[in-house]
Length: 365
Image (tube, rainbow, N blue to C red; front, side):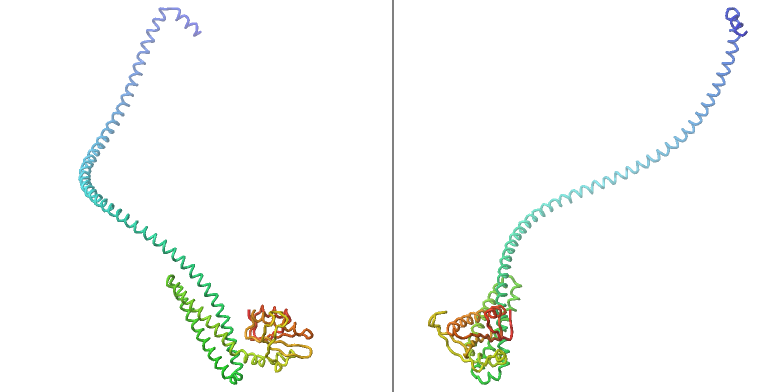
C-alpha cells in the first residue's frame, strides 16, 4: 500500500514539489536547531579549552618567572665562574712555568741518569770480573779441600799408628825400662809425634779460617797444606826412624806379648831366632840375602813376620819368604805366622788364602 502511494507521489510532479517544500521547511528548522545545539556545545567546549589555556598560560607565566630568576642566578654563577676561570688561567700560567722548570730539572736528571747508567755498566763489568775470579778461587779451594782430605786420611792412618805405639808403650813399660836407649828413642818419637799432631790441628784450624776469605784464604790454605805435607813427611820419617831403631827390641817384645797366642798354635817363642836366608836358586834374586825370624823342627820350618802395622808391604815380604823357604826346605812343611798389632783387612784376607796364620790385636779397613 505504502509502495503504491510512493509511486503516485513520484508520478505527480506538482504533488512531489508541494511535498518537497513542506518537508524542506521542516527539515530546515530541524537542521538549524541541530546546528545551533552543536554550535553551543562546541562554544562550551571551546570555553573550557580557553579556560584550560588560560590556566596553562598562567602556569607558563609562573614557570617563565622562575626561569627568569634561574637565568639571573645563572648569570651571577657565570660571572663567578668567569672569575674562577681567570684565577685558573693565572694558576695554569704559574703551573706552566713550574712545568717548564721541572722539564729543565728532568733534562738534568736524564743527563745524571745517563752518567749513572755508564757507572753502573762499569760496575757490572767489574762484578762479572770479580765473579770469574771468585769461580777460579772456588775451584782452587775445591782442589785444595781434596788435597786436605787426602792428607787427613794419611794423618788418620798415622794417628792409628801413634795410638798403636802408645798402647805398645803402655803395655811394655817393664820391657822398655830394661832397654834404656829404646825407651829414650820411643819417648822422643812420641813427643815428636804429639808435636806434629798439634801442628796438624793448628794447620787445619788456620785452613778452615782461611777458606772463608777467598783470595787470602787460598794463599793461607796453600801454606797450611805445604806445612801439613812437611809435617806428614816428617812424621813418616820419624815413624820409619823409630821402627829402624827399636825394631829388633820390638820384635822380641811382640813375641813375648803374643806368647800365649803362639803357644796355642804349637809354637815356642823362645826358639825363634833372627837370621839370614840366601837366595841360592834365584827364586827372587840369586845371591841376595834376606833377614828372617824362624826356627826349624824335624817336620816343620816356622817362619815369622813381625809388624806393628801389616799392610801390602808386609804381604809382599811374607810371599817372598814363603817362596825362599819352600825352595830351600823341600822336604819339610813351611808354616808362616804374621804377628802384628794392626793388620789391614784386605791384607789379612789375602794372607789367610795363602795359608798364613794371623795373630793381631786389631783389624783395620
